Image (tube, rainbow, N blue to C red; front, side, top):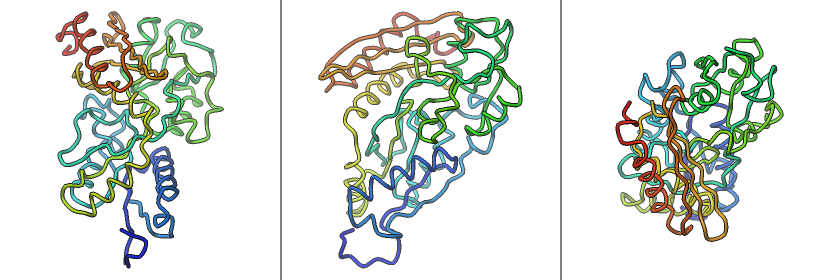
Amino acid sequence: MSANTARTGPLLTLGSRGSPLALRQTRETHARLAEAWPDLAADGAIAFREIRTTGDAVRDRPLAEIGGKGLFIKEIEQALVDGLIDAAVHSMKDMETTMAAGTVLAAVLPREDARDAWISPVADRVEDLPQGARIGTASVRRAAQVLARRPDLEIVLFRGNVDTRLRKLAEGEVAATFLAAAGLSRLGMLDHATRIVGIDEMLPAVSQGAVGVQCRDGSASPRDADIRRRIAALDDTPSRLRVTAERAMLATLDGSCRTPIAGHAVLDGDRLTLTGLVLALDGSATHGASETGPADQPEALGRSVGEAILARCGRGFLAR
C-alpha cells in the first residue's frame, strides 16, 4: 500500500455501527489515519462500511436478555474476519474481553472523559429526586449504583441513541437519565448535561470514553500486516495502559452482562491506580478494591484488583 502503487479501490475500509456516535468516532479514526499516512489522505483512499448489529436492531429488551453488550460488535467482528472490512472502530466499553480469533486491538485512540453525565430537568443529583422517581437507563452498572443510594427509585429501561434518550427524557417518560460524557462531548452535545458525575459518586464502565480500532493480526497476508502497522501508529500509550488494566480486571472477574461491574484506572507518571467495583443488581451489596502498581504492568494490576474483589465477594456473587 505505498503511495506509488496503482489502485482501483480504497486502500483501507473501516467498519462500524451506524449510530451518530459510531460515525463520529469512525470519522475521527479516518482523520487520524489520513494525518499519519499521506497516501490515505487522498479522496477515496479510505472507505467506510456501516454494519447493522443485533444490539442496534433489538431495542425493546435489555441487552442481558438478548446476549449482552457483545451484540454491538459481533457482526462487525465477523465482517472483519470475512475480509469485508479491514478495521473495525468500536466504543471500547462495548467490547468483550475476548476478541475474534486472528484479530487484535491495534490502537486505542486518546481517551475522552470517562465519567457519566447526569441529565435531569427536575433535579441536580440523585439525592434530590422525588420519592419513587423514575430513572431511565439500560446499564445495570448505573442502575445498581443509583439503587445503592436510593432504593426507592424506579429504574426504567432506556435504550436507543443519544437523541432518542434525550427525546424520551424531554417527553417526561423519566425524571432523569445518565449518558457517557465522552459520547456527548464527541457529538457536541455536552451542554445537555445537567452536570458531570464525579468518579467517587459513580464509578464508570470499564473502558468508558475509549475508542478502539480492531484489525486482523497481520499473519494472513503482507497487506494485513501493513494495515495493522498503519493503525498501530494511532495508538495512544496512556489510554492503552488504562484500558488494559481495566479490561484485565474485567476478564479476571469474568462477570456476565447481568453483573454490575465498574472500573477506572488513573495514570500518574509511572504509576497506575485501578479501582474496581461489583454490585448486586438491586444495589443491596457492593464489593470494591483499589490498588496502585507500575504503569508498565497494567495487566498484572488488573488481575490483582479483580482477584481482590473476588476474595471479598466470592465467585458465586458474580453468577447470581
